[in-house]
Amino acid sequence: MFNLFLAVFPEIFIINATFILLIHGVVFSTSKKYDYPPLASNVGWLGLLSVLITLLLLAAGAPLLTIAHLFWNNLFRRDNFTYFCQIFLLLSTAGTISMCFDFFDQERFDAFEFIVLILLSTCGMLFMISAYDLIAMYLAIELQSLCFYVIAASKRKSEFSTEAGLKYLILGAFSSGILLFGCSMIYGSTGATHFDQLAKILTGYEITGARSSGIFMGILFIAVGFLFKITAVPFHMWAPDIYEGSPTPVTAFLSIAPKISIFANILRVFIYGSYGATLQQIFFFCSIASMILGALAAMAQTKVKRLLAYSSIGHVGYICIGFSCGTIEGIQSLLIGIFIYALMTMDAFAIVLALRQTRVKYIADLGALAKTNPILAITFSITMFSYAGIPPLAGFCSKFYLFFAALGCGAYFLALVGVVTSVIGCFYYIRLVKRMFFDTPRTWILYEPMDRNKSLLLAMTSFFITLFLLYPSPLFSVTHQMALSLYL
Amino acid sequence: MDLIKYFTFSMIIFILGIWGILLNRRNILIMLMSIELMLLAVNLNFLVFSVSLDDMMGQVFASLVPTVAAAESAIGLAIFVITFRVRGTIAVEFINSIQG
Image (cartoon, rainbow over all chains, first blue to last red; front, side, top):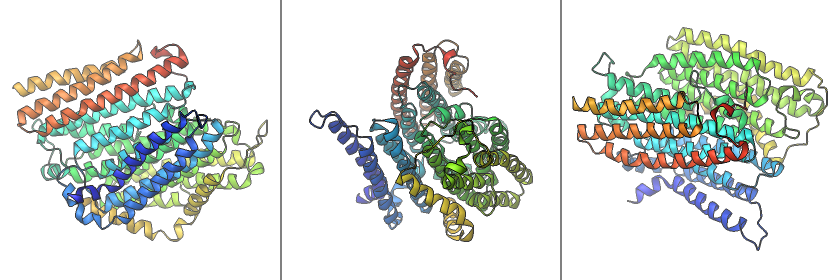
């Protein structure tokens, strides 16, 4: 009996931390004795600490992988894949929370519930990564999404924020409905919701004609639901609006954390749960369309957050290349791509948050950043070059490995489109760098120096991005382990 | 034959829910109701399949989905309330202040 609880000990801890922080926040921020203090930073630091302790519990609990097998028949599965994926998710969450503290101070954002919801959503994402049954997967996806709907609308007085929250709610609820319909079709056609049972039934299954129309519809709808959630084209309808309207830390969260966990779920369902019956064509098509749209639409953007939204859509397209292959190399390249994408995105959003002084919204505001803030300009340039895929930075490594995997399994057209759109995309990334270094704006904007958290985060991520090429083997061997344990 | 009849019924409700979201021109409460319709149709689907397969997991799933639907509508209504406070209207045409 104790094995059951030990196996989910990190989740139990983070749920307890959520509730204790919620009660702590409510009791102290409504107490007359302490004069109603705003507790956002306080709860924020405690929340960051609890995420790090959860990470410690998870990382030190490696021997539990062998005794956690009791969970397999029910709802969750812990193996190498979930181990490393959850560690990575918790690291990204910790990094993104540490970006928020300055935002709370500057914007006078008093709601401590922001951090509580982020912790709850992180717990949902931990469950999502280890989910091994359609029920558990759906419930965990909903737990994560519901928390995000609220924090996307958290700036209650701002029109942009409430509209972004509204659009995110409708988009997310619609996609969850479609996902659930797919789950019901698969359940109806096979009678199984557990991935092990689904794997035994569906692997190598040929989708032919009317006999298997239920399974076909189920897999199609689940794929569409997932593609809505990772904002792939042609299901990216309101994603740029949501990214632009939400408060910037929330946009940072939206671009990083749900994508990691939804990709983990996609890998479980489509690579383990139903290998032969997967509609590979739909992922091919969405990958190509995302890359093309991400490259072309970002050229016309004049606002920084919208540009980052479109570049994230394009990057999802590249990452889906690794998934469309279906080989172990493909999955390994997908995991490397996600890892490097999360680090680059954290870098980019930390810089956008650092430049918030006079509300940098437009790209033109970045003019002459090189003269006022040379180190920040250099860091931003490194990030943009890494997004563009210029060697010897980390972004080049991830794209190279993705195209290599695509060529290795014979998807020549995919790799060709990837390379062409990568080159087209270089244009707007380098245009940002040019604005920083060579343009002079009409009114010079001076930025305050950033706080310690963001500078530490930026230092670590830029260090990794710059020097990844020299020693990539730890990441390669970790992702190889993850990809292998996905098949077992 | 019975299974197909019930399944068609819940499929029609699901499609009505999707149309309600996509073809909505009045106000966004209709969108929330359509989302609820979609989730309800899928719930009915689960129950129908559970009875026809004589399996319990469908009913387990069907008893967990409404909790999620309820939480979602609570959050949706809260977001509509703050939208109304900021704008003074919940007509769909005005939900376009983020352009591009």
